[in-house]
Length: 284
Image (cartoon, rainbow, N blue to C red; front, side, top):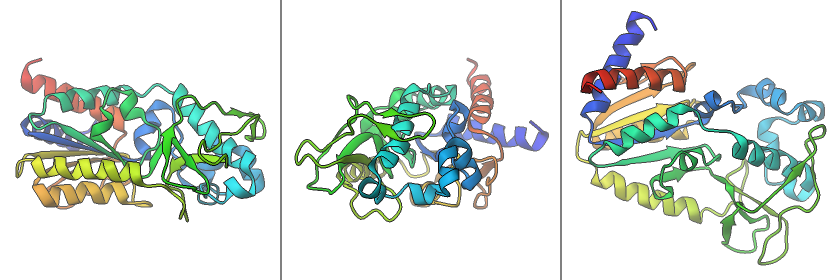
């Protein structure tokens, strides 16, 4: 890293070392270092799903609940492949660094993420301290929906043909009405998403934020872009509400409000650099 980057890393390390509470805000860029695609633009999406290029279907078009009615094997081919991918992917070492920082905070930590992969929980974060604002691929709901039931996808297995990316075999179904099930994920144009699980997470998040001492918060935001700015807005609102320091880590869009810290680099690289500086500050 250059001199300017080193100065930013130094500032970030001091902010983390002096904070009382940690808010982790993560977008799709957080998973790139684990080997996950971020679907940035149609080309990035089609590189991950070539058959959808042939069909001319973009990510925004594919991530639509209508497919579960119009073409269930295509819908579950896409989401089943992602479910299998997330299960098979080991979260990168940056998750462990964040977990260690969280454990050292006197007022604890919370995660706000638009990612639906469950990798924070897989890395040891309590489900009670994670807000998944777009839902979770590890949970299912009725595609109708017939009610408000949400259940774990832990025992769900979806076979996907590697060539066509279509699901084969028995598809998941709703245990209440027998209709096709779908992931409990907020999709585009989605009026059937059952939000109760995420709403409960939001309630716990608000309670936690209310307990954070004024000026004692550090927000570490990772891989959250402006195309769908939910995560960036949450990070900035938290700082506006409680006070503290925002550390924004984003290769392409590191811009921050005046006085905050914006680092134009990847998540894992930056977390490792900050961790090395935090260790040197504390003598570990």
